[in-house]
Length: 454
Image (cartoon, rainbow, N blue to C red; front, side, top):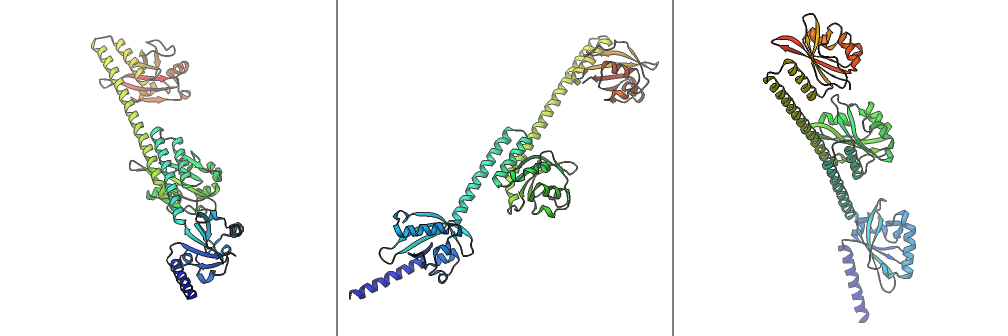
């Protein structure tokens, strides 16, 4: 009666264990003291890619342990059988497993063992691939967000410059784990000029071809041509297939593949951000889409810089206009006091020199005999000719040109000038000068000359 009862109990326990193996979400692998598989549940079949019938009687080492870890596994398993190592029981251990196709993946293992004989070891195994992937994705996202914060801080503090663009390139290279990144701007002739770069040691020689200041044409099929044509993302998976200068330079630089996304500033295509892989590797799909957050910050930096530059130019022009208006008021007030013509002309010369920021302003009156008389001049850093000095109007010089044409003239190279005006300019060391006509009641009266020796 006891034997019958014990038999039924054993059958019931075996049935419950089989039911557990069938229903278990985790892979369950049971091995004997020799390390041979005695049970392999459906979840284990799905995880490792073997059918139960294939694995029974075979060792764990040859089935699910990567070759590089088999020797260590064999020693550890033997020690576990010999000593019992209770500290390993019930603990979660992270290891590397191997599927039937040879691919390796991270697993979590929890061990238990039976009491009595024969000894069997039960391992519950969980695939950590998704968890590891999710953790990696979170880490990458955190790294990317940290990089974006650093770039945003740079954008807020630094002007759009080589330092800023190269700093952005380094952040992109780090986040995307690529060996090469450049920021380029399109010129009016369609050439792409590098404004910032970051090259790892793998592509250290690339700076000679694609470093800051280098220029490359928008060859057909190149990243520059694709972005210029579509204003969208671009990709080249093998630069060796690209015909033209850019393809040759890219191969010489050690690039295998590259992708780019456009930098648009105030609705206009400004340039592009490009990333490259080295020889033997191709950039992952959708890499170019990961550039947009960085590009938005770069575009913001450029837009802010241009806005600040425009504002500064406007403020400078407003100041210039205010100075001009103040100078005109001072001259008008002098004329209203019925000052002498000489006083008025000298005041005009002084005010003009101050507003134009030149070394000297001189006024010459054209005489009926074909000469020009110096009638007024501002203070000068040299000893100028005295008022009343007459100059002939022959030769090639700006005063003679105004007298001849009635239009303004400029001269930045006085070596080719001739005539008495040119001789005086040479004595005074004048390097650059402009002359404008003075018209009184519709008639050419004389000329105002602005000169500098800088």
